[in-house]
Amino acid sequence: VASRVAPALPTLYGTTFDVRVEGQPINIAYTDKALRPHQDLPYYESPPGLQFLHCIQFDETVAGGDSVFYDTFVLAQLLRERNPEAFETLCTVPATFQKNHLDRAQPAQMFYRRPIISVNSRKEVVGVFWSPAFEGPLVLDGALRDDPQAVAQYYAAYRAFGSLLEDPEVQESWKISFRLQPGQIVTFNQRRLLHGREAFSSHAGTRWLQGCYVGVDEFCNRFRTLNLTHGEGRRGLESAGRVGNQCWR
Image (cartoon, rainbow, N blue to C red):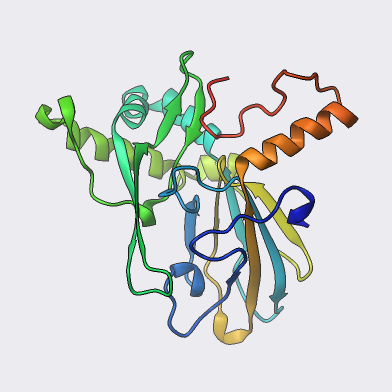
């Protein structure tokens, strides 16, 4: 299915990957614990765009395990409305995203620094990066190093963004959740959407998803060319807007 858009993207986890409980997991995804909403591979310079998750097996005896999604642009706008100072902090102070893991088949020393929220010259949100499990220590340099309030301001802003995901009003209005059925595939733009899952009872049966990624550039290119042929696209003009890839348009 993914190849109808573009070739699957090789990553540290291979070209395809299985999400199921393992005896010696190297990632919390390979357990039955809840996965808080996040984006994958934020420590890449250009994280993957589309993610495909094919439900191979999900026994009816397994309780829990619903898939969960949030739109990061909505969360960023809510933060801007509720706490402008926190929004500005997350636009200017860079977080450190990392994969610092040597005890694996493909050892990883991957690091990338960027602000959690990216805006363009019109202060419109063009990208959000949220993946607490893959964040390293906060590094302050330049003018921030001499600002005694910078650390406290950053973590206050960080908590303000994270608290949106725990807010009952936000959950009621913006949380998308459902239980995948065997044979179904969920496809989403993980540069813009956070994804997660509820904890589940692995002792009662099997929950097994198989996934892969497609690059955001290949995805946008495919969309634009199809829009020229079958839609209302115009050659040389952008038609794939607000995909979360930090493009200033």
